[in-house]
Length: 408
Image 1 (spheres, rainbow, N blue to C red):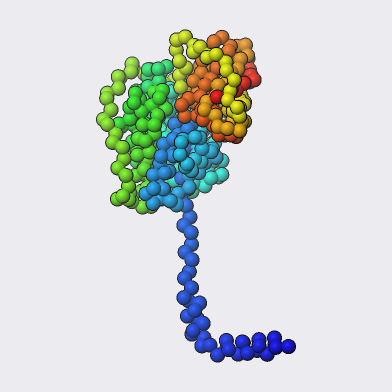
Image 2 (image 1 turned 120 degrees about the vertical axis):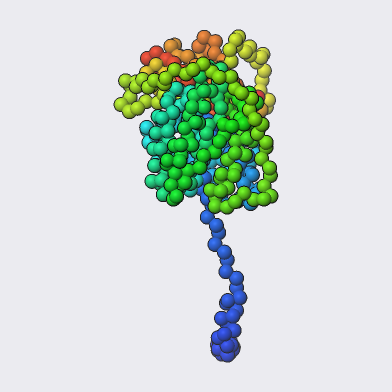
């Protein structure tokens, strides 16, 4: 039985070691640095921010490549496909008006769920489309800023002058956007504080609706790059650093050609309050892609989809008011291989008609509707989803028809 004598000898040996040597051994172990807490950044806006809002993917990847890796994009909405991996969380709600978000107090819930430190806000395009006065839009901005500061007294807020608008269905929208942008600087100067600064980023200058959008409203790849380039220096400053000297030079923004001055906009009138809701109802909420004019596209001959490719479509009414409604269709890939495109068909109930759409190419002949993917949302991996939305009119109550999806 040698175990007890050996243990006694070992303890005696340790007792003979000078205390200073033991302290030195402990001190020699390097302390593990605490992991940096990521700065939480909320991209806030409408479909220009979230459907798909691929300027966010470009911006996030540029931050990563230039050393700003402790950044967490946050939001209650997930990413849509932008062709590269990125942190896609956001609050870019397609079709939303900033005035409705303020009136209906939607932001506090989003803030509580995500706890941002920085907010990037490009918001107001749908309000401009709906002919809401700049003063009313700025009042909504102010309410949102107050709610941000209630969530985080040190919130850093970056507000965009919105990109230009030239939808074919709204000749006055271009000048309305100019009118809104003209008052944003003064509003920000009066609302900023040392604890919670507001920085204005000019997304309007140098942005062309003819070369930087695919429909006069939503940015294409060139537009996404320009928006990312404009956000980058302001966001880096808000992160607490300076723009790294090794950062890539932003894409040069050419001086825009003079946009034709639209006819003078009539003095905005207040949107009528529908009698069907006790709260302030939403004005039709869209950043729509205007439906093509002329003869409807003739469907190609029906062919069997490739093996393993399949999809489903679910249609829902997201909002309605007297005589009008907003709808959304979610397309889900249910096959075992990636789709290259999809087509959704449905028949509208009597008295319903679609007036505007976004995130899909849509044609309507009588009550028959066909919607096809646009170039960025047709490729869906198994179980992935894409959504498109629209505005419509109805008599009585809007109801959701059954939608059928065909994948390719």
